Amino acid sequence: MRLSRIIMALTIGLAVVAAPTAAGAAQPQPTPSPTGSPQPTPYPPQPPVLTVNPSTIYVGDTTTLSGFGFGPNEVVDITVTITPLAAGLPGQSTVRRSDGSTVAMAPVAFRAAAPTHFTVVTDAAGNFTTTYTPDTPGQYLFTAVGQTTGRTASATLTVLARPQPSPSPTKTHYPTHKPWPPHGGKLPVTGDKLGTPLAVGGGLVGVGVVLMIAGLAWRRRGRFGGSTR
Image (cartoon, rainbow, N blue to C red):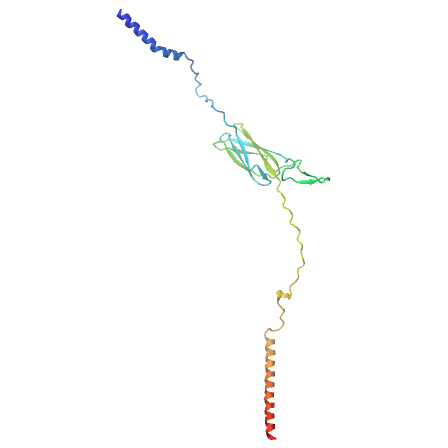
């Protein structure tokens, strides 16, 4: 009797212990992924971005293109599409109509010497930076496509015609008068500079000496002549 009670108690105890394990095993378990297969990304990658700075320049100036979010060390193709500027934008030439109004001139077709297709290589983070110098006015559309990832981004650039400098007012030229006296403001010198003054001075001194001697002789003659009478 006691033995049967002990066996029953052990059976009940084993049933209580095994119940949670059996309940957990009954729940559906996640299917394990195959070995070596990549795990799905919890969030989709951000789309790439292409920027142009500055976005409005004059012909001959340089702008900077920057790309972000491409593949690491990826070759990116950049295509440039150029369209004429819309009428009325600054930097356009204008013509005057017969009624006095003006209209902006836009080229119908042109060929830009700047490249319309080139490639760049991204860094380890999938970014790149390059420069571009347009030589034709117009609206530029840059489209960047990654050769490996196929990611695409675009940006626009406005290129204006460089303004022409305004003409300077016409200057009136007046006749210039020659200075007087000529030869740089100095009178011409003829002959010796010191010979003429010395000659004139010596002559005057000689005449003075002669007159002085004649005067003394005249006085002496008059004095002796008065004493004999």
